[in-house]
Image 1 (cartoon, one colour):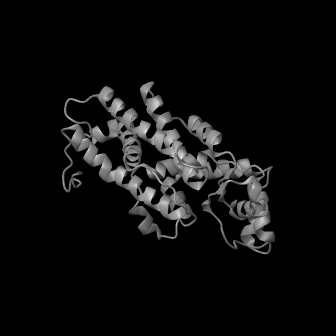
Image 2 (tube, rainbow, N blue to C red; image 1 turned 135 degrees about the vertical axis):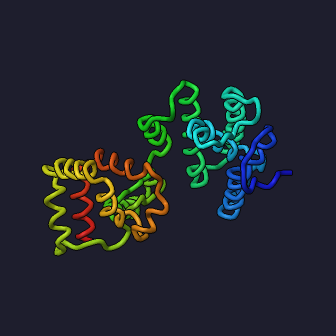
Image 3 (tube, rainbow, N blue to C red; image 1 turned 135 degrees about the horizontal axis):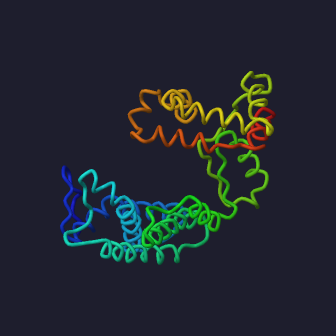
Length: 274
C-alpha cells in the first residue's frame, strides 16, 4: 500500500517515506510504461521490477542533485541517512532495473529502457568516485555503445535523416528527430538559403559560429530572444515562463561550442532539392 504524494511540504523521515516519494514520481511512471509495452506488443513485465526500476532512476537524481536540493532547503534523505545509505538504496533498486530489461525481447521497448538505465549506472559510478556528474564524453560513449544504428538528426538534418532511414531501413534501428526540420523548409530561390550557403560553407562556417558565439557572450539575452523562435512555437514571453535563471547562460555556452563542418551545407542543399 503506497501513500499519497505530499501536497504542500515534502518531509521524508523513514525509508518508507522515501519509497512513497520515489514511487509517486517515478515508480508509477514505470508501471504506466509497462502497461503501454503490453498494449504495444504484448510485452509482459514484473510490477515489482518495474517499480524498482523507476525508483532507482529517481534515487540517482536525488544523489546527483543533493547539493542543489540542500541549498534550496529540500532534503530527500530519510533521518539519519547519509550518502552510504542512499547509494545502497539506489543500487538495490537499479538492480531491479537490470533484471527488468534482461527479460525484454529485442525491439523498441528494450531500446527505450536500456539507455537511461546505463546512464543511471554510469552517473552512480561517477558520483561514487567523487565526481559531480557523468561527464559529456562518458555520456556519449555509453550512448555510442548502446545505440548502434540509432539515428538522431537535429536541426536542418531532419530531411536527410528521414530520407536515409526510409531508403535504407536495414541500416537503421530507430530514428529520433531532435529539434529537427520535418517538412518543407526553404527552396534554392529563398534568400535564407542563399545566405546560408555562404555563411555556413565549409571554409567560413567556423568564423560564422565564432561570431555567433561572440555576440552571445556580449548580448546573451538579445541573441537568445532572436533564436528562441527556432526552437519553440511558443512566443518569447511564453518561453520565458519555462526557463530558469541559468538557462540563457547555458544557451550562450552552447553557441560557443557550435560547429557544422560540411553538415549544414549538405542538409540545407538536400532540403532545398526535395
